[in-house]
Length: 203
Image (cartoon, rainbow, N blue to C red; front, side, top):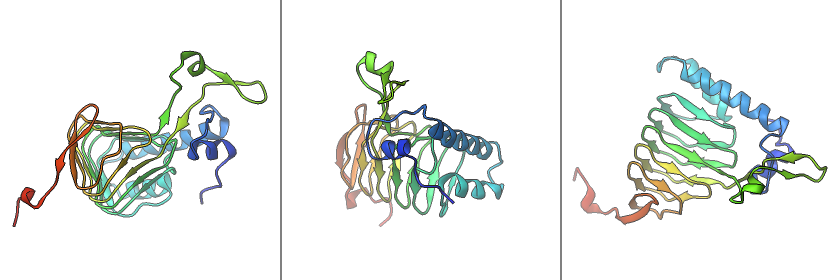
């Protein structure tokens, strides 16, 4: 059973400034890191893997993660049916990550939700209302639609929405929303063209 989010966790999930060093958040992350490590050290046909994913994510439908996997919070990520992830999936889910059905991700895929301040003096630390210093973060959700394929070494940045049926080319850094039914690639990632019936391999 997943407990109700603490005040600091609610801040992270609602796009407010939060303290990633908060003791309750650190405990959630340690749990997720430990479960990720446990999963990653099991052989790929070990039935305990599904049990770990259920515990790590709060729910797990169908699919396969090759491993190793790295989830920051775990319970901030929702994954649909028939998910496939190749080697080295990293999801830094301080904010919410929502992944649809039939999504495929290539090796070394990274999905990131938190941002640090651009101004160094703020990045190095600010004071809370009680005068305690902390290094602030702000997280923005990532939403990935159904039937999406992310190529090898794709990075999805905070606040991005990727529409249904999108293909993202290998090595892309996705900094802005990508509309449905598109092929997109590059750093920064840009839409190249729409996917059409002419792209079918099989008629």
